[in-house]
Amino acid sequence: MTPLLEFADVSFSYEQRSVLADINFVLEPGECAALIGPNGIGKTTLLRLATGALACSRGWISLAGRRLDTLQRAETARLIAFIPQRFDLPFDFTVEQIVQQGRTPHLGLFTGLKRQDLWAVEHAMDLANVTSLRKRIFNQLSGGERQRVKIALGLAQEPRLLLLDEPTQNLDLGRQLELLDLIKTLNDEGVTMLAAMHDLQLIQGTFSSVLLLEPNQKLRKGRPQELLQAAILEQAFDCPPRRHPKLIGEDRDLLEKIP
Amino acid sequence: METEIAETITPITPTREDRRIGSSDRALYICLLAVLVAALAIVLVFSIGMGAVKIGVREVLGSLLNWHRSKGAESVILFDIRLPRVLASMLVGAALSVAGLLFQGLFRNPMADPYVIGSSGGAALGAGIGLFLLPHFSFLGFGATAVMAFAGSVGAIALVYWLARIGGRVPIVTLLLAGFAVSTMLSYSTYFLAILDDNFGLRTRVLASWLTGVIAVPRWTQLEVTAVMVGCGLIVCFPLARRLNTLALGEDYALHLGVSVEKTHLAIILTGSLMTAAAVSLGGVISFVGLIVPHMARLVLGPDHVRLLPVTAIAGSIFLALADTLARTILAPSEVPVGLLTAFIGGPFFLYLLRQTRREYTL
Image 1 (cartoon, rainbow over the protein chains, first blue to last red):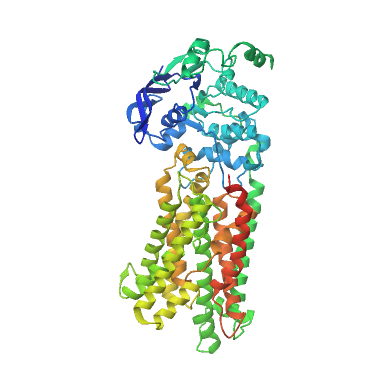
Image 2: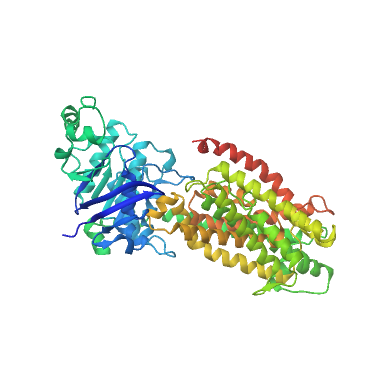
């Protein structure tokens, strides 16, 4: 099977400062992967490289078997959707209007939304459970609601791969679990996921694989139970032994108790 | 591509409800457009009738519908003075309002306006240079003033855009400061040009009226040239309006949605400048119209640029036609510059908006 996303010896630097070096990994269709690593290591940069918003300085990236730099912007946007952390809107768009923007890569300059586009929008809102918010103003929504609307916007693109940048940040426990459920549902529907995750306790049970970025090391990919080990994480996150929070034990039990 | 997508997300079966998305809204919107067009026609007839010599509605309608020109004084006033002037004010109003809408989308900032961001000032300086230094120049039938006004406006916006943008965003503070500085430099350069030229002669008076914003009675050819400029601009605006909606999500996000952001920005700057140049070559620097009209339209319709565009154009025509009629009748027989009037209305409105949006921009 052709991998959906492949990074081959990818390096990237802002001006002179090297951010990512020699990144290699493959994401198969149907995977649900969490990207973890300490602050400032370049998780967001990696995601933005995958969307083509940034161009890598060395190496190459392929998307569904085609080199990313040979794809048109709109072609890329039909394959891959990116859900950013922050989203500031200067005008009072409604939820529906925002989700409709997801159809942009499918539309020409002179064509409006057709019936099939409206269905895609409805379906996306339905999946992300924001249909009831349709007429609400985005800027007046709560953090959890905004996050779901952003995901609906990404889904309206009908992408094969959904990239999420810290989707659970600033959400309370209930909303975090709600979001993880959504990620799982979408993955079951066949959408491949790659999410930069801050909170390591939320990974087990939702994600099928983990990509670990650590200083001065090659990117490692493995199953959550292989990589979420105290010894590995202490080194990667540079935290002294026994000062880190319990990772897998109690908290996972808590998560699993909630239906 | 479509088949691959079908594999990813199973399309839902369309239900009857799905087909009615937005249909009731659309009917309302079309009604609003119809009402505005009717209002525009009424304002046209009313404005032509107003002035030192009052012309009754029946006479105006009769003359316009039959296009009957006679040698009589009333006919001369109607066809050679009132009608061109009212049409000019309508064109200027539409051009400035649409330019305002475009710039607000470009800067992702509801405070942008051709006057505030220096586009009008640039166009006025360009027009001045054309008038004084290149009186015989012409390009594709457009005189030096129109061409240079366009160039001046593009230059001014490009400068403000470059100065005010910080990391892909244009904060309100830098936008207003850069716009203020550039506008001031440009308007004093225009004065300086006038002083150098002929020590307050005829052309200087033309220039002074430009800087305060007076819609002169245009020649019909001038009106035609401007109408072509505004018409072309409006045609380009329709596909741009869709892009403005996407750009509102942020440059970065628009990029992720497959929009070529730089090209779109360039297209907006060029189109907005074309509109501003058209407006300035007829009426000079008229402030705040591009701020008030799109804002009012947004209050009624929400922020969807595709819907805002036609409404903004028509409402802008109505607004400036009324303002200009007021300007030439309020202190008759002398005339108040319409730019002064819009500044009186628009200035406080601008400050009110600034106060309203303050909390959003301190973050």
